[in-house]
Image (cartoon, rainbow, N blue to C red; front, side):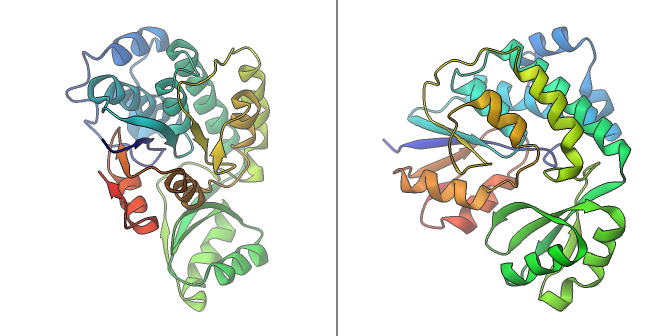
Length: 272
């Protein structure tokens, strides 16, 4: 039997109707009860509702589809919370409360400064990183070969888009409401850290890889807050999981964004 790592997507993988077929899942039933609002009816309103909705769909997919042979888990940014729930390190009720607080904190921080994110497709990483440094932008995501994501103020992102071809890249603005994984999320990280102090994490049933360190979580209560400010090292995370002997990657939750990334990072592995 293949050794499997389950992967859970982050913000940006949301889509209208993604809860279809999942409304009777325990995660959605309990989650909507705890939230006291339905985030699926307000996906167009951004971060505040997209994050809880994605978390609920990801955990529901885990409950319904849990494949045999799972020995590791990882999530892209927000997806880390579903991964920790899947591994038994985080109780579901605590998970939805944290995601709700995280979404509110990030939306509030994003409203303080007009920011966003731009994917830079192609080009040499050093050249893209150099452009980011010149403009005061943060390299927020290292997603896959040829895909870095820059985060920061909208005016600086607009200049980066204008000069993308100068570094051999194509720029694509992401559908997110703020400069995530950058110093502009400082207020959100402080608020999330306070919420995390009230949560008891358990020893996981399997390693859960952190995108901030590209290694298994050691102290989730500390690392989850830090990860709001740190780049998502997704390419390195996938390589670390593969190096641990994982032959198969299974994405659970809306979309197949992570599956496409995995196929570019480790083409010899199976990704579905």
